[in-house]
Length: 402
Image 1 (spheres, helix red, strand yellow):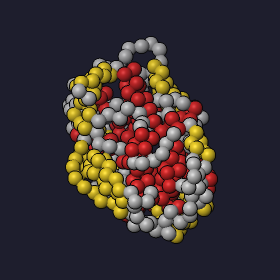
Image 2: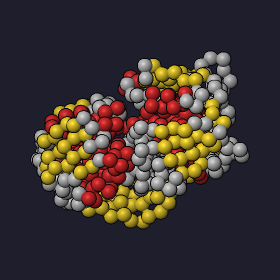
Image 3: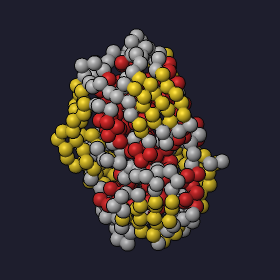
């Protein structure tokens, strides 16, 4: 997506072939990006937006990141665009991005607050945004729109969210500033061409989280997960697990694509309950479902609060995680903004569906790994949205998967 910001040939190593990344790739190809491969390296050259008298329809599939970031990227492009996706994507809230974009002059319509989104040519101007909920997707959409806006675009967040967009824009030479506490960032339209990217993408921490928890819970386990992104704005799970007593060691620290990366060593450990909430939530939002599983095996209560954002993911993850854990025999109390998990409780096998939610699918699989008896997972293919090969990796760690 960032290839549209800079001329020249971008080089990308370590690209993840997954459902969500494929949605972005196909959308960018439709917008004029030329993609080629050589010795495992992806080369991207942006050829300029297509000229058409008709609206361009882009299928974002099941990817909330794709549709929200594209809405910011294309708000000032001069194109007529329709952004749409799966039925599941159509249930996710979009006003959180369309309303601040309209405050910048964007002509963007949502469908009763959801997709499809309709974008029309418009001239953008900078604005000061105060987000009510910390959201890396909304922040990123506004920063991308700010690259095409007259004047300064400022985004204030109530808590730190993931900062991958800020890091990439800084690498490209964009005029972006980030406050010391990471809560405020500002950008202006570049006056000189930005630099093309030449990066190696580190491993996805959110995917590694399932393996980290699996190794923490399964008896006599020890694993090494190599070259994982340890950006502090997304590794809240590590901090929480270490507080619970997890045996985690960080080795071979390095930098990849402007991000801290390392090998993570994990061994089986006895966990204890903890309190999770406040500023920790945006740093671990996608990992909270698998954290809840860890809590079922921890001594005492684990309380997760301030996580109402989980209710508007691919599914209502607060409700569904509670339902899943209860099906395995765990004791869980559902709260409006989180849950209370009482541990430790022995788990037994269950017959469950992922409901098309990749993180729920992987949660069920890891729960089945530590539960007594057989677990049957329906609609497992959705795990490929973010972690293709998940079940092969699980089998490589000793799981029996049929």
